[in-house]
Length: 233
Image (cartoon, rainbow, N blue to C red; front, top):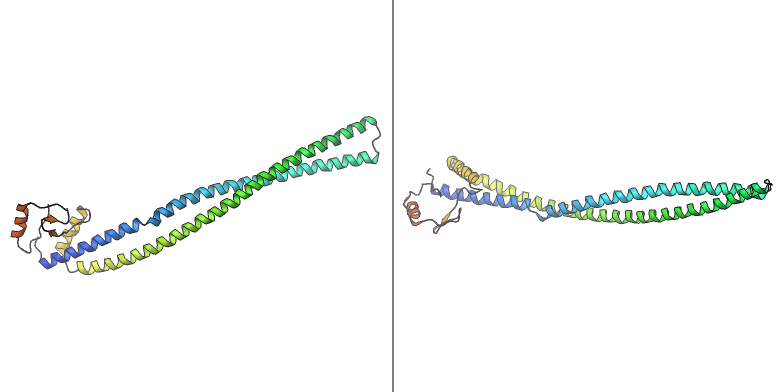
């Protein structure tokens, strides 16, 4: 293929712009905020699981406390009724009196045991509530860090996208002045060679493959017509 030297030079400008677009795409993909947000999101998910578990434990303790307090109240009411019967003198049989006194004593012991249960449940519930408070604060803190990292990422992405738009526009202008066959060959080679479709020959080194050319190859290039599109094999 032949192309005017000026067109070949403009093709190098297109290549520079494409390299810049590749760099911007890599920069956008590799923003440190991406990894930061991903890590914080994992932490947040774990904390939320722990928070749900703590909230469930607190809720279970609340129901258990209510049940235990109801049991205490039932025993207390029964003991009050028995005590009133005892104090009223309505029970005259010695055996019945003995049984009633024994029941009152048993109820007192039962009430004491149940009140101990209530206290134990209240302690567990208080511990669960403290855990809920702690985890709620940690969830809020991590969410705040995610929001901050997201804002920083969005700002960086917006800046990069703005530069991408500018470079893309410039590429359209420059590539529009390159003959279609030459640009088509460039695009084909760029797809095959990992993004490099045109490169300078500086001294004896191809700036595309970074390899030094042999003297015979250099002589062939020097002897070629200026319009010849030289290919690096």
